[in-house]
View 1 (cartoon, rainbow, N blue to C red):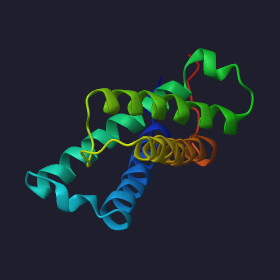
View 2: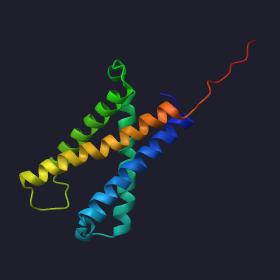
View 3: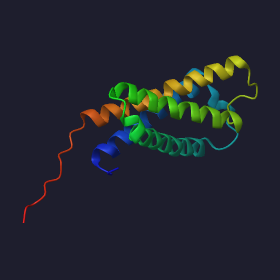
Length: 143
């Protein structure tokens, strides 16, 4: 993997897209942020770092050799987002990282599908960036 402008732009925009979706869903739609027990600034900062990591992982999964065998870029992107979303959901459920104390089946199903939607948004932004951000190939001088 080369750390190019295309990589950095896709990675950062993917993280911003997922973070924005997270903020709208949990902060505005569900109003979960009022239940946070520590300084909000720390929460926002640590969440931003987490979404940078998540976006990087989606990018890396998208670039793995076994996913590259899939010829449809859209399907590759969706599978990358799905793999990361299911993994995150499993980790967060086992560690009980949640805004609510009542883990009903309805809550778990909703959270599961929200994770898929959120990471699919990030994967979509990443694949759009990879497909449409122009990056010239480096020129090599002949000696």
